Image (tube, rainbow, N blue to C red; front, side):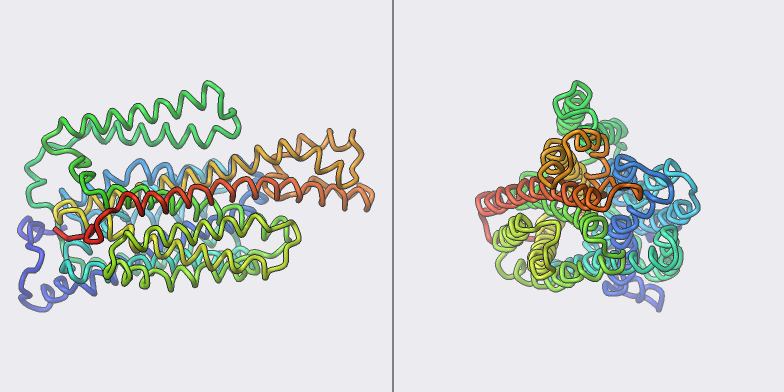
Length: 528
């Protein structure tokens, strides 16, 4: 792709001719990585709105739809540190371009799949290529922007991520409603081609010059990937196997053990996959935890909000997307604001502020009912969007800004891993909480709504459908019984939502406290 001399190019080489001038321009680099970032962000939120339609078209169960989300997140989480390390070692530009190309092809393959198994398999492949792409966006920025401007670059990076996530429900809603669910994946083809063409023309090659001489940590890759897979798999299956079952506890326990083994192994290696020295910086460590929490809440809440708006309230995909617009717009505003505040006061102010806003959003959702008016919804969306955008900007700066330049790709991988694991756990844990609460309260809610006890007992088999906001009614039922079943089912679903948002809100408060106590120094983001 490039000669060895280009690979080892210094960070701020003097431009010599047009091509060199183009490749040494940090703003062109930012524009190029924004393409790939936009594609991944759009894809993340598009799927939540396409899920109900995918389920109907391919006859998928709730568990299958969780795997449409989680196979992607699992593959992404398992390979992100590897993607960052490969970029640091062999060239960030190279692996960014490979990631964009693979992500685009996998997206097209998902749209061509005619079975739920095919969709899940290609989503995992898409996740793997996303793992090559994502960490190297931040690594490329860290290599070309001077330290004083890096915070601003991260603010724009976070804003692009927010805008793409924001557009997902609207673009996805329009495509699902007027074209097909397949088109939400096919839209990545033109974006991917544009990203490849522009990036190939303007991106500079950058890498850690010492990494080429280092031994590659194959065992570290295997331990980390296996540990993360086992951990997230255990959480995903907890809902169906039971949280105290041997299978669930075994998978989670094995995952934790492998991650601890990975940590121990990294301290023994001369050239580790993830240098443990990075965690000596408290702002970086706390930033990693807060990043995971941030996406735990965001992806978990968006997942069931979309189900609520479409299946409980009966809005079309476009109508649901438009109603979540305040969340998107607020996160777009909050990202540059968060970056500016972080630059001035450090992440000790912006991280707790962002988590507090998210907590307030979750606690506000406790007031939602099956027929709540929209004026009870949008304040929570705005608070959640402001919180997410603010935390995104401050935690990116806390993690990547505190890492040495030569470890920029690894730090980008660390942040992206925390973000994706948080998202996978958020979707799994909150959906499991909803399903558990629905199972426990469905019979009572149905009888309270006027369904005869024997009929209510018979409907318990449909608790999976109710956990997705779908009332188990058929055309041949008497009108009054239909009304009662819908009322009872939706009330049971809302019980589940309340359990989920209460849990998420408590975690946000814990995150805010951790950030205040743990990030002691305002100057915690001194750039090395």
